[in-house]
Length: 251
Ligand SMILES: NC(=O)c1ccc[n+]([C@@H]2O[C@H](COP(=O)([O-])OP(=O)(O)OC[C@H]3O[C@@H](n4cnc5c(N)ncnc54)[C@H](OP(=O)(O)O)[C@@H]3O)[C@@H](O)[C@H]2O)c1
Image (cartoon, rainbow, N blue to C red):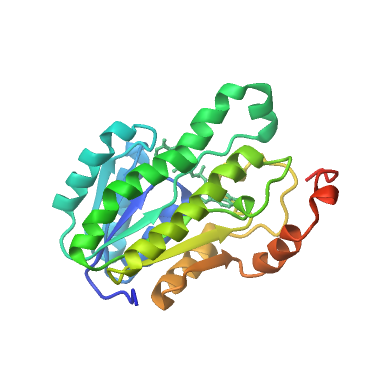
C-alpha cells in the first residue's frame, strides 16, 4: 500500500527545518509538488525557489503555526483547495528547549508540549478527513527516540513525542481502512538547528541521510522506522533498563 506515483502533492508541516528541506528535495526530485507550511516565510520562499529551479515542480509556501489551533480547520480547507490529486503529509515541526531551561522556567512546558504534541494532533485531525475523502495518500509523522523512554535529560519533549507515537498508532489504524499508510519516524541524533548547542550528542546523522531513509520507508509502506536503523538496537536496550536502575542514570 501507499506506493507513490508521480504528480502527487506533499504537504510539509514545519517546512523551515533542515529535515523538512531535505525531505522536500527528495520528493521534488521524484517529480512531486510540495506545499511548504510553516512560520518562517523567508526560509520557505527560498526553499520554494530552489526546488522549483532544480526539479521543475510546483512549490507553494503557506503560513502555518502549530500553536494556533483555532486556525487549523481553515488551514485544512485551504490545503484541500490547493492540492489536486493525491495529498501526502510530512509532519516534522516540534520544539525542544533544553530540559535544564524548562526546569528553570516551567512556563516553557506548555509551548514545548503544544508545538510538539497538541498542535500536531490538532492539524492531523483536521487533515485526516481530506485523505479519507480522496481514498489515497500517505502520512509521515516525525517522532523521536526520545519518545521511547522518559529520561532525566529530555522528559518533557520526550513525553510529547511518546504521545505523538501513540496518536500515530491510532491514526494508522483509522486510515488503513481507506488504504492510506502512516509512517512513524524515530530519528536518533540529527545535525540540525535543534541540536546545535546540545550536549552529550553521539552517532550524529545528517538530515539528508534521514530524509532518504524516510522516503525509502514511504515507498515500502513501512509503519515505523528508526533512522539510522541502529537506533532500534540502542532503544531496545534502553527500553529494557529497569526503572530502579534508570532513575539513577544521568542521561
Ligand atoms: N535534531 C535531532 O537530533 C532530532 C532527533 C530526533 C527527532 N527530531 C525531530 O526531527 C524534527 C525536525 O527537527 P530539527 O532537528 O530539524 O529541528 P528544527 O530545525 O528546530 O526544526 C523544528 C521545526 O519546527 C518548526 N516549528 C516549531 N514550532 C512551530 C510552530 N508553532 N508552528 C510551526 N512550526 C513550528 C520550526 O519552525 P520555525 O523555523 O518557525 O521555528 C522548525 O522548522 C522534529 O520533529 C524533531 O523533534 C530531531
